[in-house]
Structure formats: structure tokens, C-alpha cells
Image (cartoon, rainbow, N blue to C red; front, top):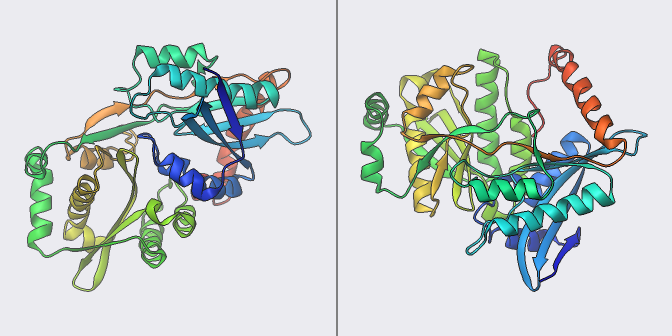
Length: 355
């Protein structure tokens, strides 16, 4: 049956409804995220819906960055394309990837790069053959996403039993000492979290991996059912810690966390993580993604996350379909130049990376 690709023909509300039907839907494929990230990176956003007959088999939101004055550029899909539905197989993924390469690579002459939402357990041999068969090669310029993923199918009692002893002790202490947690999704709560995060950053001066202000602006624009969940922990009336997550598709992803000295004293982060896990399970999520790990570069955060008992999981990685003509050479050259200037950008006060 013929596969057809509809490019930039979908409205925001329709995109939201369509994307929600995929198990691999995630915050990075929301309409609002596309708009915010395109604005932050001075790029364009494009969306494609793929049908086989009357059935939708996939969709993707891309960010397009063209090189100034040159007929070359990059079409970038992060945590997509969406293709996993009941009954879907690797052939559906191949058809979707073929459409992406045909529209943005063959027709527009861009290099097409995808970072699929594919944990190792799903990226089986058939899936990897589909990616290669669609003309994409593994791209070592981007590190594969490594995280801890917790299976939420056991009961809450079983999940609590599998916590590391030290972690369970921290949770018990926080609960006994009266750490109070409030759940919100409104913009005002996101602003309170950002203030707490900024105070933590000012004190510790670590290199942030994300721009919190972008996630705050994102919260303002997300559809109601796509809003991030903001958990705020209090000791008495004082805000001591915060946790931001997104539950879409089959997974809850931990996005941001912050705490102050009082929060650390009262073990507020332990209580927050447990409440987030509970909320994700109650919302029907199958998995809790702890939001990335770096055991060597950030061992403290790694050991804290590992205490919940999740499995160390590396995603499939990044794949590229080379552009035609000069794009094959100009895009890699431009990226190398960008990376070479990274130390200079940090030296003039860049606090985070583009979202």
C-alpha cells in the first residue's frame, strides 16, 4: 500500500491529539517544544505526518538549521520520529524514515539526523536493520543517551522494597521529619522552581546541562494535557526542593531537580523522587526515566539515582542520512567549527545549552 507524507499541514491541536496516540510520544516532540527550541536556536521547525492508506503510521517534528549563504543545512529530529503504536513493526519505522530522508534530504538537500526514542530493549536487530535500510548510518558525533529506567509494573510496595538500603533510609527520614510535597502544573509553580534552581546554581556554580528558563517558557505554551508536573517540597512553609517531570506516551521523564541546604538536611529530594515515581505509576506510565546519568563525570548524582533500582540503559544513539552535494561536506565542517568555539562561548558566561 502506498505511503504518503504530509508536510507542514497539521494544526497545533491536531498534532497534540495525533502525537498522543504513540507510545513513544515525549515532551521533545510536543508542538510547544518545537517552537521554543527553534526560537532558542534561530532555526525553523517542520512537522511531517506519514500515512499508509488511511492509517497514520508515524510523525516527526524537526528543527531545520541552514548554513548562511550556502545551499546546505541540517534537519534534526530529537527523540523521534514517533512510530510505536499497537501493531507497529520495524517496517513502519523504515517507511517513516524513508519519508524523512526523501523530503528533507533528497528534495531539500539537507543532512537528516535523527536521535530516536529507542532504549536498548526496543532497538532490536529488526529495528536496526530498518534504520540502515532507510539509508541512515550510526553517527558518533553525538553521545548515545544513557540513563536509568525503572519498570513501574510492580506494586508500590515491591518498588519500595527494591530501593537501596541507604536510599530507603533517606526516604524514611524525610517522611518522618515531615517533608510536605505539593504537585502543580501551573506557570507560577514553575517560576518558584526556577527561583530555587537559580539560587542553587548561584551557590554551586556548576555547568548546567539545560536552560531552565526555556523549560519555564515551555510550560507556558504546552497544551494542558502535556504540562510538566512540578513537585515542590516544603519544610514548614519554606520551599526546600523541587522536581520537574513529563509523563507522555508510556514513560515519565525526570527533567530538572533543585534543592537548598535545608532540603538536603531533611532529605527532601528522596521524598520528591518517590512521590514522582508514585505519580507516574498512578498516571499509567510503564517506565520512569531518571533523566540521564554520567557515572564518571557526576558520580554523586549517579549514585543517588541508582538507589531507586532502575536498569542502566543506553539508547540506540544518533543516525544520519547524508545530504546530497555540498551538504555532505559543509555540515560536518560547520559543526567542527561550532564545537571548537565552545570554550569561548562558555568563557563569556553561557550557563547552559540549547534545549
